[in-house]
Image (cartoon, rainbow, N blue to C red; front, top):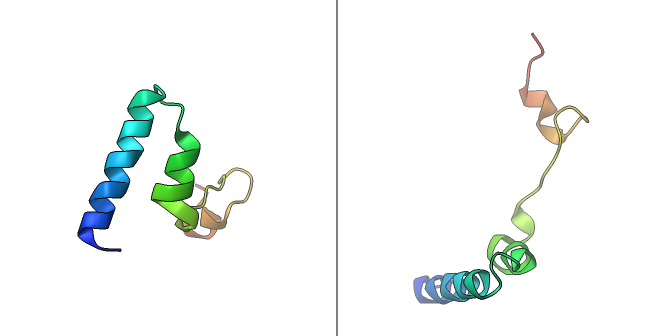
Amino acid sequence: MSSEANVQLLKEAYRRWNDSKGGSVDYWFDSVIGPQIKFDSLPQGGSGGALCQVL
């Protein structure tokens, strides 16, 4: 994606965020962040657990 395309994507995302008063979370997750992000829970054995040490 070109720099100009990134700028346009962010402008649209912020416009939607402002217009919806924060209700455009789905647009951010689907269009801006995309499938590259993953949420896990350390207490529930998320994938990051291998990087943690219990003291």
